[in-house]
Image (cartoon, rainbow, N blue to C red; front, top):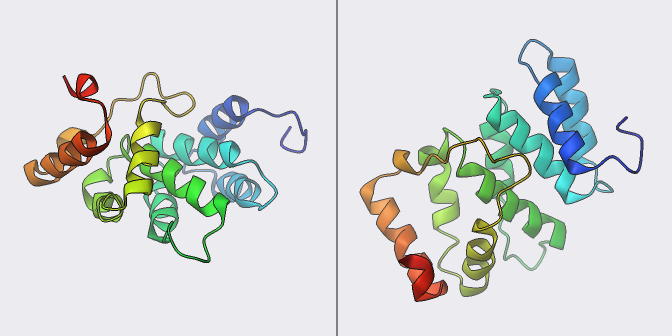
Length: 161
């Protein structure tokens, strides 16, 4: 199924959710190697990362952190790295590791271009997120205030009401 060039991100997500149980480490390894391949569409990477996050797989926070640790604004950054950074930052909102990993996102929101790109993406839920609650309540008041200020700088006023 993964070799089929027509496999869509929703199918990848569903497959990763069903097969990503912690008791099946070989399957998770195969899925992540497949999703990490440079020729793979970024939506497939997002599907696997979000499925592992939603199932509470122990490797999920480390996968998100690896993507968020990369500097999306570096001269050496590829468009794929930037896309994965944005996707990881978006998935993180639904991950219990949000309070721990949020500083990796927050420090980048001072950049106008990246902040705008991130905020624009917030209105689009990642694939199959319709039942997954966000984890914003886990952030400190200070972190929430800083997020609000970033939103206020980049979002239209009517969006914040």
